[in-house]
Amino acid sequence: MLIGITGQIGSGKTEVARIFRKYHARVISADKIGHDVVEKNPAVLKKLARSFGPEILTSRGRLNRKLLGKMAFSSRAQKKKLNTIVHPPLLRELSRRVRDALKGNKLVVVDAALLIDWGWHKKVDFLIVVHSPHQVKISRFMNKGYSYQEAFDRLKSQLPLIRYRQYADFVIYNNKSIAALEVQVAEIMAKIGRKKLTLPV
Image 1 (cartoon, rainbow, N blue to C red):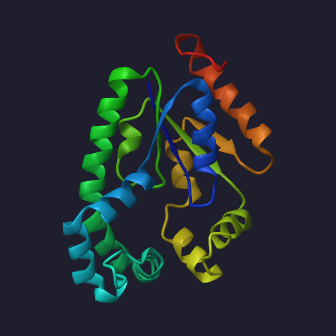
Image 2 (image 1 turned 90 degrees about the vertical axis):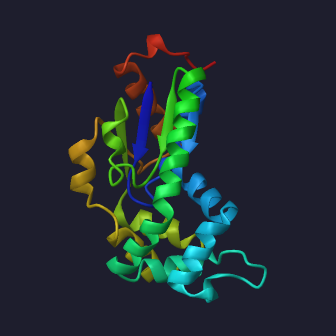
Image 3 (image 1 turned 60 degrees about the vertical axis):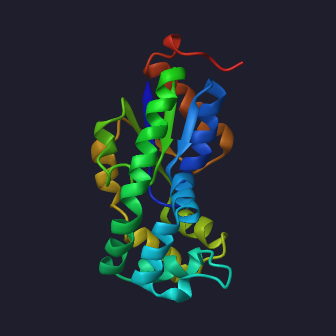
C-alpha cells in the first residue's frame, strides 16, 4: 500500500510520517531526495549556478540553500526556473525509491509538500493532508532561521488549503500534541484496513 502525506510547509508532515514508522511503514522523504539531488549531482549544481548566479555557491562549491530559496521564492518566474532544474531528477529518483520500497514493504509512505503539484495524488492509494493554523506554520519555519517574509513567501507559493482538501482522503489537524496526532493516525489506519498490515508493537 502506498500512502501520500502532504500539506503546506510547517504543517507537520514529517512528524506525521514519523508516526507511521510505528506501523512499520517505509517512509520516503521527497525533501531529503531533493537535498541529495542538489548536493550529489554536479550537473544540477551547475545549472542552478548558471540560472541564479555563482553567488549561490560557497567558496567550497557547496550550495547556499537559504540564498537560493530566497531568490527562488521571490517570484513565480524564479520559482518556475528552480523547479524546471530540480524536479525532473528529483521525480526520477522518487519513482525509483518508491518502486524499490514497494517490493519489500507492505506499507510505504511518501512525505512530499508538492505531491499534488507533481500529480502523485493519482499514484497513491490514499492521500493524507496535514493542516496547521497559519501562524503556527509561519512560526515553525521561522524557528529554522528564516525571516517572516521568507516564510510568508514560501507559504504563498504553495497551493491553497482548499486545493489540498479537494484531493484528500483524510485530513490530519496538527494543532495540539504529538499524542493527538498519534490518535488521528491510528484512526486512519483503522479505516483503511489495518488488519492487512503489521500493527505497531
